[in-house]
Image (cartoon, rainbow, N blue to C red; front, top):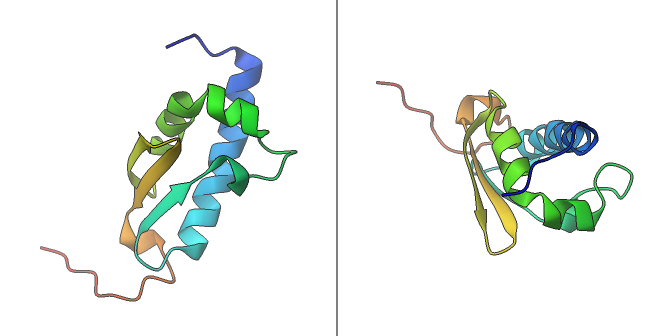
Length: 95
């Protein structure tokens, strides 16, 4: 994997913040697929997403609401901790 410049890392961190907020607000199941076209162009252009998808997944994973983040078929699949998902429709069990 190529090294990410500080400038690109700052863009990816802003994009990760945006996506984690969007995912927690929108998911009803605790899972979400992130595609390049999920971002407004001013936050993350598609070519930057494609070139840095693994680095973006790693940054997304560092956010507290995110349990898992992995790259699948050109997108990022994330699993959220359900207590951060206000639209989750199921039951949260604790042991």
